[in-house]
Length: 284
Image (cartoon, rainbow, N blue to C red; front, top):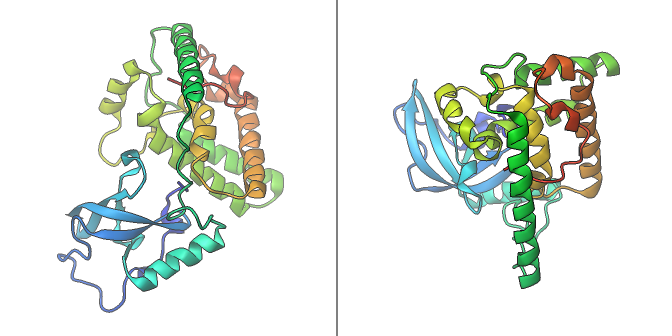
């Protein structure tokens, strides 16, 4: 799923027609099927909860056909009524983004059923990855990364943006979009797939309220995201040329991490040595 940010959200004029409802009246009801902006595309979704917070309605939405890990709280400016006009708007955006007509709401086609040989090979790969994962845990030792880290993921992304701006002589939109995407993927993926068991309690105690993980965690956990990115990006339907340019930008960012590893990483953390890896293997 593309990165989610208010910069990509529709204007208030796009969300509905007619007069705006009073602040104490919700425009969308719980259980209602709607359309929701997520990055530059519109997806089919369902309102799970609706709450009035600080005189502003917030909605907890589930993107239909997506894992519940993508469920999130959004403002009304990200939502559209499920009307024929808005469905046409969704289709127009899909066409603009080059989405395959056979995919639903911009989602990649479902994975084909696995043959018995594929399943056996996958089982062997899982067994090997578990063994490697245990070895990595031992290598890291019992001491956890203390939080909050300095610099944080947000700090590192800003430093890279400053670096590219100085090098290029200007801020380029593609670089800014990639950095927003990295931040969004990190915040979403961290509690789901980037933590060891012993780190989950630390996460629950540290990331509370509306705090973003990217303002607390640092390079050690950011590096784990890049091992998972090939797996995550497999669900994003983008053209081959666009994918190639994205890979080049991500590689440039990894080189930046490696160049500044002594500043970004803890001295005892070995993860920086794998910065130039190509994402093989999985983090358990």
